[in-house]
Structures are given as structure tokens and as C-alpha cells.
Image 1 (cartoon, one colour):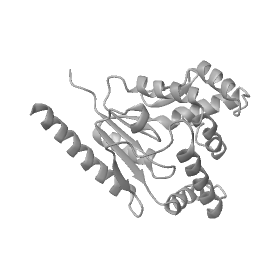
Image 2 (cartoon, helix red, strand yellow):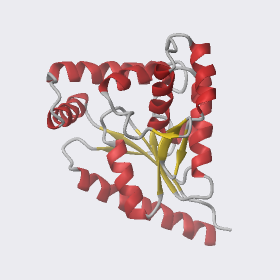
Image 3 (cartoon, helix red, strand yellow):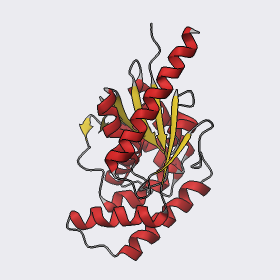
Image 4 (cartoon, one colour):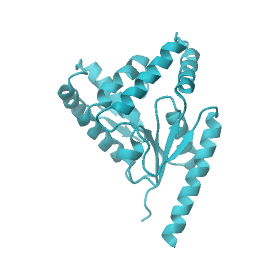
Amino acid sequence: MAQSIRVAIDGPAGAGKSTVARMLAERLGFLFIDSGALYRSATLGCLEHGVDLGDEQAVASQVGKLGVELRAGVPFIEGRDVSGEIRSPHLTEQVRHLAANSGVRRMMTDAARRASEGRDIVAEGRDAGTVIFPGAQVKIYLDASAGERARRRHKELVEKGEEAAYDEVLAAVEARDKSDFERREDPLRVAPGAHVVDTTGLTIEQVVDKLENLVKREIGEAGKSEKG
């Protein structure tokens, strides 16, 4: 039986991971695994149940009851599809509490792995290649300057009709970077053997083209190595 193919994409907030990973998965015919959606779903569930996000034990206990999972890539809690509820700016600000919780991280890692069983996948997150799928055949670290990432986020918010000052968006991006790089549990870093791809100045299509070629080359070379 052929081994399932794992493509793991990491990188800081605003580097374009979700959009790029989703498009790449579609092109390759792979399942898209959004690990961030698991954390957002868990955060939503805790907020709905009135849990103090600063209480690590209470948060981990509640998350364990939520049944957070991905069904064919779609996030569910308590049997409910929450894909349309987990992208609000307020929720985004609160996710950091769960991302720093070791108990939650273990549960979300397990959930991502269960969702990928028996499937070829493209997984994205901030520890997809370092923790969730350390054995992935292809590891990619998407990067971009903080200013570029803030510009993209600001444009996205404006297009949605939301009021946002660029300086505030930039400050939020830099604060998220600090939280991700300095957190105690599984800090953001480049996975061993990962290809670092700087997306600054590139369009989404250009980035996806680049990654598609990279993945096909890596998979092809791995296949040749196994045969050899």
C-alpha cells in the first residue's frame, strides 16, 4: 500500500498560508488540513461556554468536551459546522490563549492527524512541519515582511467593509509574531529540511505555481529514491 503524501506549510500570520495551501491542495487533488481552524473552533467553543481563556486547566477541560474535529477539512465542534463563525477579528485576537496551552495543543495535533488518516494532504499552520507532521515528505515555510503581511490584511479588511487603520493592523501582526515566536509550547520556527519561500511582492498565483512545481519535484525525487 502506497504511503500517503504529506505536504506541510508553516509560516507567520499573514504570509498567505491558508489561501495558498487551499489552492495547492485543489491543484494536487489532496485534502486541505487547516490546523488553525481547529484552534479557532476550540476558541469559539470556549467563548460560547463562558470559559476564562486565561485559566489553562479550565480551557483544556472544555476543549476536551467540544469534540473539535475536521470532517473532510471542515471544522466542527459539538457536531456543528462552524466554518462560517471562526474568522472574526475578535476571535482571531483570542486564539493566542489556546495556542499557548500545552493540553490544547496536544488535542489539536491529534485532531489534525486523525483528519489526515489515509489521505494525501496539504496541511498549514504554525507547527505543521515541526510538530503535527514532522515526517512530511515536503515541508515549506512561507514568509513575508511584517509590512507586506499587514498590507495584505488591511486590504482584506477594507474589502470586507470593516474599518481598519494600517498602523493598527501592523501592530497586531507584530504582536502576533512576538507571541508565535516566543511562546513556550512549540514556538514558530522553520522545520528541519523545509524550503523557505518569501512571498513578498508575489501574487497568490505565482506563489501557488512555485509551490506546485516544488512539491511535484520533491515527490518525484522521493519516488525515484525509493525505486533506486
